[in-house]
Amino acid sequence: MNKNKTIQNKTIKTHTVDNPLVLPSCSSTQRKKLSAPRISLSLDQSEDDLGETPDDLDINVDDLDTPDEGDYLDYTDHETDWEGGEVYNPIPTYSAEEERQDGRLWRTVIIGEQEHRINMKIIEPYMKVISHGGYYGNGVNAIIVFAACFLPDSDKVDYHEIMENLFLIIVSAFKVR
Image (tube, rainbow, N blue to C red; front, side, top):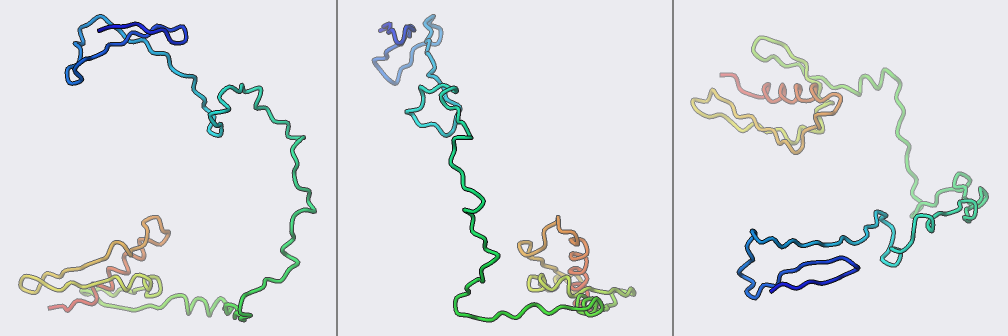
């Protein structure tokens, strides 16, 4: 059953189906013509604002009420009021030599016939995730386990140095047979 409707001076042809499970054939010559509603591309308009034109939305910035410089609070003149009145000790300052000595703790290991120096300070945050899984087979094949969720990001500046030192610390822990 076909019927024609006129909406907003546009003709729409629709097809009514008596049985919703049986669709009309695609070979019919009937076409549906639909008119699209007016679209607003502004994100901050409500449905009531659909009739406004861009000229209605112009704002004169000179008419806006803005705060003066004197309206801002100056926080630099006030003491910060800490709850509990606790006194915090500042971080101790180091001389350049003290910082160099404290900054790197080294371990020297011999793997095979080569001597390697491991920077223990750089791998300290990742030491808790290193695990030696043991041996399998005749005891000559080692299982090394790294927990990937606690390893450094690959975009870290010293990533390769950290990973090399982590690997060396694991390999140095193996018993050589």
